Image (cartoon, rainbow, N blue to C red; front, side, top):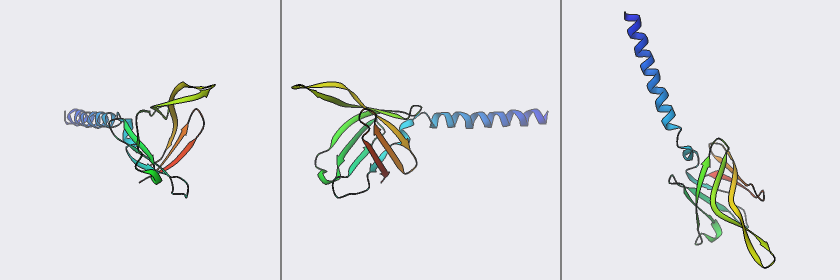
Length: 128
């Protein structure tokens, strides 16, 4: 009888830990939230800040008075960030909408690499 009670207690504790881990991992954005910047250079240094409400800002450190805002969604399984930043291609005399900016993501604890999937522009960013 004591063995059955111990087994049930053990299974209950294991199920509690399993459910807590599942809830904690549901918010994929936790990995991104915070400020990230490039290593300073003499020409331009981009700074990105991701917020937990799926909004973000970026700016050139040299021109910090001009801040661009955008919304994003992070797909942890695909390691992609989809933004509402519109991309246009200049055709003839017109700018033609070609889609929203999507970045592939490489992420470690202190480094974030964003690569624009359309033109391969890459930002190597470090957690501030």
